Amino acid sequence: MTDQTITIEAMVAAPPARAWQAFTTPDDITKWNFASDDWCCPGAEVDLRVGGRYVARMEAKDGSFGFDFEGVYEDVDPQKAVTLLLGDGRRARTTFDPVDGGTRVQTTFDPENTNPLEMQRFGWQQILNNFKAHVEGS
Image (cartoon, rainbow, N blue to C red; front, side, top):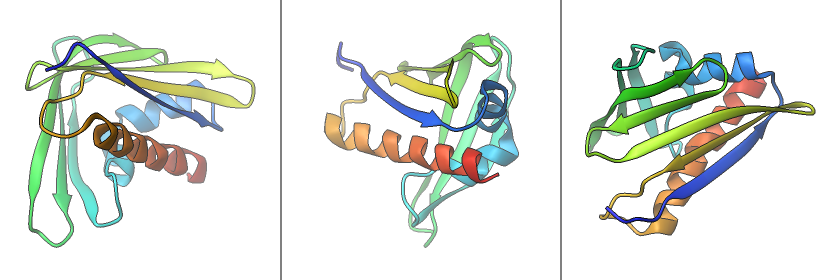
């Protein structure tokens, strides 16, 4: 791991309560948690409490590859913030800040060492963009 963190954000035209719900409900997660249209999230599990487990199954639609994105909740502040300790020791913290017209959703995460930083930033931003589209379209 690197000492650097990456931050992404989206302005969501919905109140924090709706953004929080879509971010933490398994059925919602399966509708937005993928970086491109050739991937999907066929299942998610959420035990939304400190020490609770998070799992999102991510798969290529053609069946060529898949993995479980897993973590344990370190911090849960309903409708405000959530922190995951990922399976490889990295952290990801997402905040939900009310702003005029909606919610600023911001995620700061520790990058992994396999892929370039910009590739990671782009992939996580695409997922957050899908989240925004899901919340605003539902």
